[in-house]
Image 1 (cartoon, helix red, strand yellow):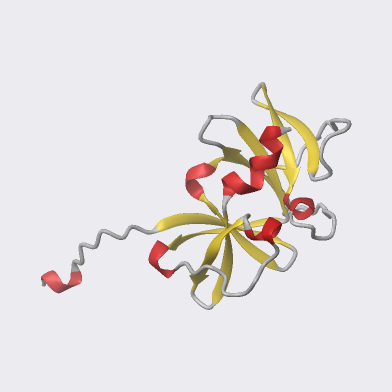
Image 2: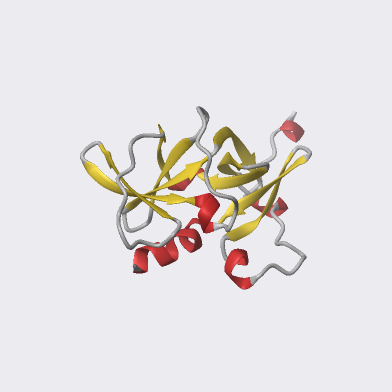
Length: 154
């Protein structure tokens, strides 16, 4: 009977899987504060090109970033499935990421996460925490701190 109960110290990490174009990215659920529909974004002049503007979320001003622009992909094309993922960072500040679609929540065992074996350019490689497997599909797991790092400095 006890063979069905395995007590391992490895705990799975939950990720929200989002789509940007045809690619799937995983965001550690521990960072996610909220997921909201697209709303009016107020532009902020002279900000970084990947910084879209700000929104008012429950009385708090939240900066919004285009992950597509941040990763050097083609520009955003908003659809009914587009969402803003609100991330709460360790210092309790918030930032929003525009994504094409929120797919699902998956559990990924950290022991199965692989670092890319191929050479990525340094800038884009720093955004990636690793590659996770969910069934047959591969998910690029984002390093949230690295993605927002330059934004916080500005």
